[in-house]
Length: 564
Image (cartoon, rainbow, N blue to C red):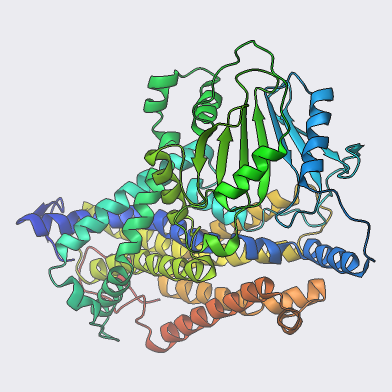
């Protein structure tokens, strides 16, 4: 990490390693705050579904009651099989939606029961649907969607913040640039450290700057392959969003470009309408052949250009959760047929019928979002993500520890003020963001259920608390600010199960007793973070040196180097 600098500019001199050290230091600093936020929220986004489950207690309690009610019902008459369901759906669509460009039929769930539903595109090219009686084919009234008792974004908040900062395309661009800088910082860091693997096995506690450097090296080397993978895949699988030149070159850039691109990507080889009429054949033979070819039960039957000689019938399968653990891609089996029964395309489960580029894109997406390997892989991604988060945090703190011990007056007379600003940003970016994340969960339980735009209010609490931590870090001496925010984080995390019990009547022991490990996992993980934050606060309280070392005599630091 050491680099040779000129006193006035801080420019790197003295060879490749020194230049890489300078690049690693300053690229790492200016982007470490953003990357820390991206990595922390990305780690939490791995468990998006359990977090959403915890944040919607009324919904999963209602689902459990419905499941118990279904289990208590007496056995009913036999339900129509797949062939009859497909026939009913085809007859309904022929009678009511003959002219549509696409029919989509969901005959049953993976076990062969459930509802019979049909879909099509309306005049605004939006999905429309109908539910049919599986035994008679008669249309059934669509119940209005239930108004959620607790409006919330749930775990989706962490997903959205992780990849676009809730900023749409502009936010996606910012995160993508940060990911590119991260790759640059990783490469320069590898070049800088001649003894990178030896450093991994070296840790000297209570040594001030040396301890921070050892910690930074250890977590960086431990998760280095993961960091490269996660940054690279994050850039690649969203590339067409912020690098659309290739799509525009082929399709143009008018308003319909995205629709045409998506259509050709998802239905390659689809021919335009020929104008020659042709009745839709019975769909069951196609479904039966698809099951034999892919080994998966039928999830959906899609008829493109129904009633035309260019018609194509595609049958998609249901993924087996156990099979997903062993595959690099979550693509289901799919067989596309001509009306005469010829197989036009075949995609086996986990494979691709659209070419290697499409398969690579699917694999990149799966790698980035922990879509393979089941729960063990999710926990591995979570822990590696936290290691990456720690790498960003220790790097930012290490910068301040080094500069406080030896300032090079990189910013002239403003050096002390710049470093004081960096110190406040460090505190808000590291402990402040963590406090904002747990405040988001607290807001879910404390905000009134019937408040308008409740999900937006949860976001306002998240960003508002984060802003308050920045103001606090600026107004208070650095060491005091670290200590107060760590204690706040520890208290909020440790009391989350108690808050849940007081507001919902549920509690951790009951969750574990009934097997609700999603809710219990959220609270146990929160408590683990609380213990970690409390341990950090105690270390800071005992040593007085964990974040703010002794005052230095260097004149460029001024009051920024004083102990509070």
